[in-house]
Length: 447
Image (spheres, rainbow, N blue to C red):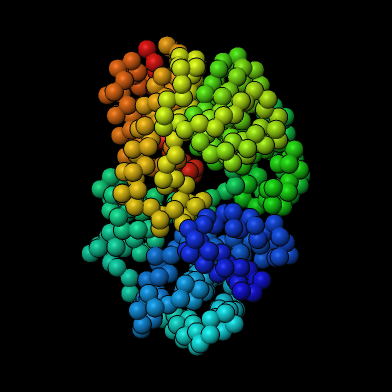
């Protein structure tokens, strides 16, 4: 495939579809190689990949209405050439139509023998009928309307309609399809948010202070890729969504305490906890994946957090007597569907199923059940996910409380915006309400 923004976009989309890869690391790989020299082309590549993934249902509806054969007969690469081209024709007014069509036809001819004329015919027909496509009617079939126009799987839309109603489901889908800002967490061990924000502005980035997270900064147009920023390389900032940052504030660690991060992953939250503790105390960071443990150690070094001890263990099983009753605070940032991060990882919504939600909840219950042994009396567990769905959140907490009479639900600290706390005392955020990823948090107090 050609080393143009459009050609690379098709290559990445093919990889995602054929191997279940994620868009972000694939994009990072190509962008780090400097194949695309201009900032304009780099941004175009990013927009084409994420846009085509976000609006896949809408684009595929149009392809089905224009293609006389069976959609399944279209090769993956040809289908993605069409998606990328249609995305430009429908959603990118600044791209000349002839450029989108011409590049798509060239890609098809050079990479998929005999498909150039088909791609040309479909796209030119799309141009002629751009304002005449027949879509599901909002009033007659709101489920299919939202699924196609706002590009989400029907099963997902159906459950949100039951839970939220039409208008909020529409708003949630719209929020999921929006382009999120890059959110940074300022490392308060190395500098204040005001100083770091000023430096970003001097360097030419479009940066503003985050609304909810006291160390958060929102970037809509970074001057250079984040990984190349001196502030990033030197550990002054870390990429982390605003809602994710708030989880550490819900844990609310104090200096000299002993903290356990049960599913620590690459150490994003562990290092934040260490920053909040001013490197005074002790954090045990546990994850089952040794590669993530290594990544967490590297992140700790970059951020200058010195109080983290890492360990490779399976959190679905009891970690052992040495862990029992030892900790002031325990964070269970459970593996989940990630459905609250769809605006950043749109491929998730096309892979997830209701059966997958139920399967994930079994693991989450096991991890939280095992964690019941770790806090001291008077200590807490904070359970969190980046999911919007009750099976992974409220249902897990209800199950836990039914099994552990020595625990009670407590409210998040008063420092958390009350707009993010439900009447039942849970922490909840949504893209369409708060402009953050969708997160859940619950504070469980051990009596």
